[in-house]
Structure formats: structure tokens, C-alpha cells
Figure 1 (tube, rainbow over the protein chains, first blue to last red):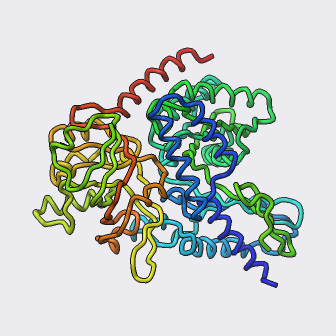
Figure 2 (figure 1 turned 180 degrees about the horizontal axis):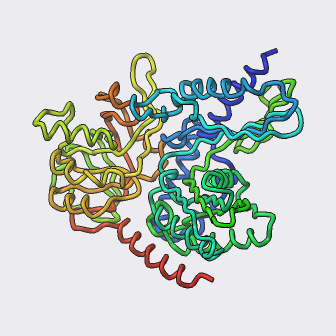
Figure 3 (figure 1 turned 90 degrees about the horizontal axis):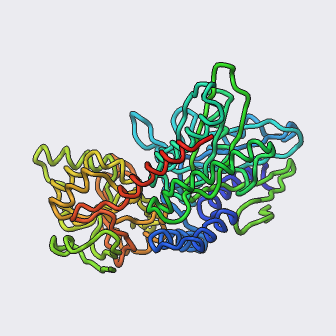
Length: 301
Length: 198
């Protein structure tokens, strides 16, 4: 039997491959519905090109977009899972391998020395790790590569608490309007509120991993999500910014407590290619890959 | 209207195109992003020659995924990148190198539109992220320049294409700019939405 470290590495490579070559079925469903609803030929043809592209990428197992993004891993690490401090090293190795094998575009650029060529930064921050410690003996691993185009239109502001909920709405609508065509709409929009200048951006990014259409369990937040989705679509940026078809297919909001003097808001926008893939690895090396278009519940051990 | 054009494209053929037209391009397109634009313009200012000729050809805002198979470069994925980043120097680039078509996604601004009118160039909008669709239209990799220095996404890839497209003309030589028109409408919509917020 393979060593557990090797199993994690192989799984991480596979998750990166799946995430960039197969768009999640829920997102594909949204895009198909969007195409049906879009009457104008300009918007409709863009959605048609996107859907054709997704289909070819899946069939040929090729990256659906050449920008395979900055790699990040969202990890839920069980207390009793035997591999802990070594995990980062294993995932860095997997990132290098995926860059060769999938392949991914080398996207880690050193400010002074240029592209590192393997998607691994020199200072240990790229690929990015978000590690949560949880109960149990499993490892839950999500690969989430995110492209530069839609990351460039992210927005952050420390609002004055006095502007309240209305101020939050205004900032989110401003951010999406400013993004316009630049981040490849139709978008999914993640909003993080509170926590602090760092946490709100993290919450916004994490919100993008929520299932499409799932509303926040807090009914007040859920209402806000619905209202924002409607108003963002009233902007009428449209598919690829051509003024026809939907601007966004989802908005997710995550909230944290705020400091009395602060109201931090982070808006993280995903292009239509919202890419992620998740697997669970048990302590005895059993792997279950979940939440992608083709390999639902598929066991690769 | 739908057009199938071949490079080098004649200026009179470019001037026939209008916003909303669909174009498929066969012939030579060359990738160039931020760094390649900068380097090309620097060399031009020094009076040095470039390793490639952009005249009548397509300049593609694209940082592809390439793979060397049996010693030859192969295109894996090659969709467009956000053209707005190149707005700060595209007008100078068009003036210096006279390409027939700028290809990218997201659209470009006023400066580029002016240069397009003056020097006979258009902007072809390729669907953002549609990287394998784009790769399907690229038949061979003719050459690569500046790879060592600029890296895979930023260097100049010279592609031979066949029916590369579909591209939507969003800037023509008649001062129309489709994505700019949408942008202005979006800003008006935004004002109304924000004013009505509760």
C-alpha cells in the first residue's frame, strides 16, 4: 500500500486537475440556464462559447482557462489525522507536480527574479493554505485555484460603522460595477463582513466555496444575499460585459463580529470559471473525491 | 456580418469592419501581454528591430499554457487575458507596429479606440476564459521569443491559426466602442440603484 503522504500528494494533484478541467456541475447548470434566458444574440453567443469550451475541456481533460490561477488549498485537518506539520510540504510537492502533469500555467512570480516556473513562491506563502483544525481522524482537502483577472477586481474597504447595512450594500454594488467586464462575468460574488482587514477578505473568498444557491442560515443575511444578487443583475453588465445575460449567478455573504470602531467589507469576485474540487482522506488512506461534475463520490484508492 | 480574414489583413478590409461583426482570423497571431508590450516599445524607441513583425497581423493578449512534447511546443490552453491592462500603451503599440487586430477580452478604452481609427486597427473580443476553444483555432507554434527573460505567460508566442475565433468586433475604425457604451450604461444603472437603496 502507498504511504499516506503519497496518497495525499496524489490526491492533491488529482484535485488540481479536476478543478481546472471540470467545472462543478452546479455552476454548469447556472450557465446553461443563463443561456436559455438570454435573448440578445451578443450575450447568448458568449454563454454558448463558454459552454462549448467547458465541454471540450472536460472531454479532453484540458484546463478550461489558460489562467489556472494562484493555487490555494482549504484544509480541514482532523486532530487524529497522522500527518500534520508535513502537510504543507506534501501539498507544495503536489503543486509542482500538477504544474507539470495537468499542466498548470506557472503563475508564481517573484517580484525581483521573475516567474518561479512551478507555481511555488520563494517565501512560503504560495501556494496558499487555509488550515482549520477539526475533530476526527480525517483530512478534508479542497483545491481552489483562482485566476488573476477576477482577483484583480476584488475590493476592500474599512467602512465607517455609521453607514450600516445600507453602506455595505452600496460598497458591494460599487465593487461589482467597477469590475464590469474585467473579471469575466457572469460572476459569483463572495462578501466578507467584519472580523478585521484580513479576515473579511478571507471570508469573502471562503464564501465562494458555498454551494450555488445555498442561502446563509441567518435569515437577515439570506435576505441581504437575495437583495444584492438582484441589484447586481440590475447593473446589467451582462455575460462578458456586453450588456446581455446575467451579471452574476450568486452572492454569498459571510459575517464575523466587528470591532466597535470598524466595519470591514471584502468583496471577492469569481469569474464564470469558479474552480474547486474536494476530497476526504481517512487515516487509513481511503480517498473519496466529492463535489465535481463527473467524479461524484468516486473513490480513487 | 461574419468575416473570414487572412493575415496580413489589408487596411481597407479592416476599415470595412463594424462593431458587432464576427471575425475568424487565419494566418499569424502573436501573443503579447504587459511585459512584452513594454519591451517591444522600449526596443522601438531605441530604434532596434523586433524579432517579429506585427504588421497586418493579430496581437493576442494571452498568456497561454504551453507544453513541450517531443521537443516541440504544443498549445494546451490559450484564452484571452484582460486587455484593459494594456490600455496604458496600446495606442503607442498600434502606432509603432501597425497590427490589424488587437485580440483580447473585456474590451479597451478611448485611447485604443482613437489609435484604431487613426491607424486602421480593430479590437476583437474573444470570450474570456474560453481557452480550449481558442487553442482549437491555433494550428502550429511557429516561434517563441523572450521566453527565458519573460516566462511562459508574458513572452511572444507566434501562432499559425486557422479560423481563429469567433471574435466579436467591439472597437472598429469608426470610433465605436461597444464595451465602453455598456460601461456607461452600467454606471448610470449603478447611480439609480444606489439612490434607491434602503
